[in-house]
Image (cartoon, helix red, strand yellow):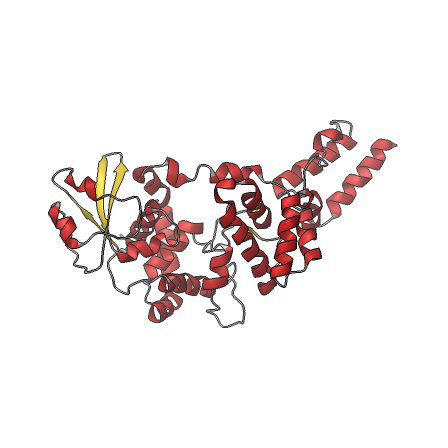
Length: 360
């Protein structure tokens, strides 16, 4: 009889909407599947249900610092405190998020390895197809914002493989984890957590249903919450800013992001140079922001073919065949405003060049 009762409980769980179960148990979909599997096996006598006990998973609402955050956020915004308490009572720490942010690809890979991730034939071919299928929208974005179609396309290609890989981590739980359990950047992610909650209200989204990257970058262009609120636009004119389903909004929003960060229409991005000695290394900087004048480069016998009066940066990138040296121009710096990594900006630029080449 007890086994039969357990089985009935399992069947009740199986018939409930997945979203409700995730909220109830603070689990992502894979973990939810394991839980239900455990319950069914337990009913059949094959596994002790205690192995699937979720009572030990602490919700964030149980923590004093989160309660303080909720009270402060409710007092400073128009967000309802009871609504916030319900949300934080439904989520808990995501250990996977801490693991992922502690070892991003940019940290552990050199340029040669990183390049191989994004300059594959399939990504290039699908980029050309995206460029062709959305030529009219991309042309409109270039007219309004000055950003080339291949750059917009490459951003989308690097970020989510043209919308295919938008991320499956629960955004609210991810942000809470980084805000309250990742001290190195807790201030930033606490701010992003508030932005996310405001964004959810403004756009009529369910915070518990939104998924994204481990750092809660969302939609096809992977905007973080503050960027979504600040730079996303309604490019298709339907009254909504939809970065999941509207290709027009995605393209327009990426272009707007670049324009707002100072993209120079028809300006250079980056150029490889070939120094005769190692004297150039004294010009290398940790900062991505351009700080070198042409005269400083010339003193080290670095004279890029591209003429630009603006300050430049110098990059040294490691590959299997040795070091490469590149001069970064203002537009290269603008790409790093999307993701603060020179490797990322190089991947976007080189993918854009491959996409823009004629097939054959």
